[in-house]
Image (tube, rainbow, N blue to C red; front, side, top):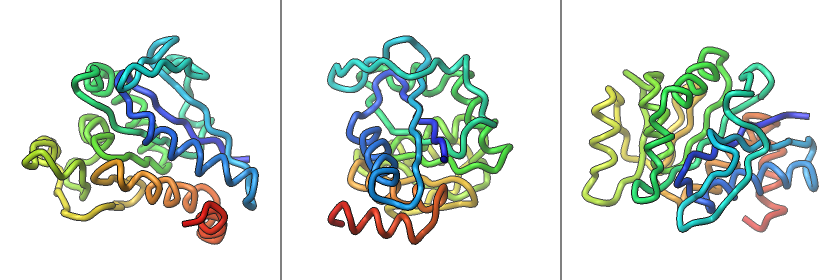
Length: 193
């Protein structure tokens, strides 16, 4: 059984987190390999965008990257405090640990920004939220990232994307990486995509 760590920072977007959780969960129910999703937060209770409250399975301080096959990072809203935790050193350290191990790191929308903040995307290709006059893409470029105008960008072990509209495709790509392309295609079909 594969294990994916789903990082829930303050102000995370529930739809993006839900896409990861649902697609990976379907693999065990209808696919060829079970994938356990373990949620992690910096606090015992994480308040997401629009006030949803979630109790993560584990605290970030308890995590060993070696125990997981991949890291999933949904984006979030600045107005709900996303960058307060997403740009913290414990989050940056977690991302660096997964990258050092060569494990997949999948982010959706502005989830690319904490990945860039960790330093692992310097000189690499990535994308992030494309609307709002390109403000988030300029922020991504300031981290030394080669910003690509595409819905989803894959650079070695890192997946980034532009918006919540890409959430399912990113989740399917992550599923393909932790199980197989065939399994991901089967789940995509079973989910009606």
